[in-house]
Length: 266
Image (cartoon, helix red, strand yellow):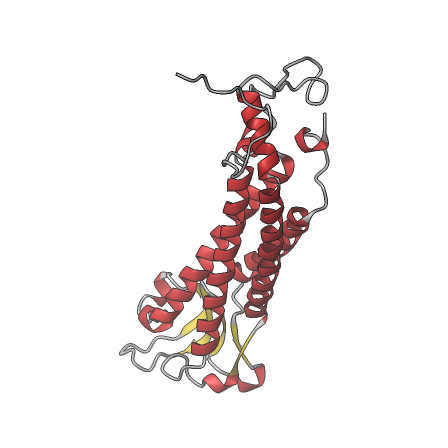
């Protein structure tokens, strides 16, 4: 049994393997950035009412909203959709910040969804899916990484350009982008590297398409048996599937000589 068709074989250290490492690091950074409330922070020496904020949490100390007719002080860290911030929610969550939340959420889902697909490819589980749909799984993983990079880049650009808007937080000159924002930036970079490596793996998979396609056609016509190489008995197949992978597209050009039976002339 070859390593390519052995589900217990160790994954080869190719572009897919190294791309999964970059994707995992980027996913961890994205998770920390997604959950932490330190996208924007104020300088301690400024003694502002605003302290720090993330995508889902804002922290104030004795903050009075000027347009609020009730003399209420906002103190502590609260969820942006909590009852505490119900009165000032429209001010805390402008349209551009809601777009940032949506983009980062989409990037988060695409990032970890792509990692699930790549983990299935590395472990070759389930085996019949890996053999039949290797090309489609690679395209899916690459697409998810590209979506992650694009949405993260848009979120970072929008937040970095609008966080100092004077119509939003007061005294924006005393605020600065904090470590959660830079974690998202590094996550975008790692996902971009992963997308490049997945693209290299996709190119390698397409290069193997002609060989795997002919093996698939031979097996369907009963002209090829998987004996000593793929199993201990003649004609052995995993789950009734030939070891041809996902490469089922036709190949232009002349087929293998003598590979298929000639058509009968009418």
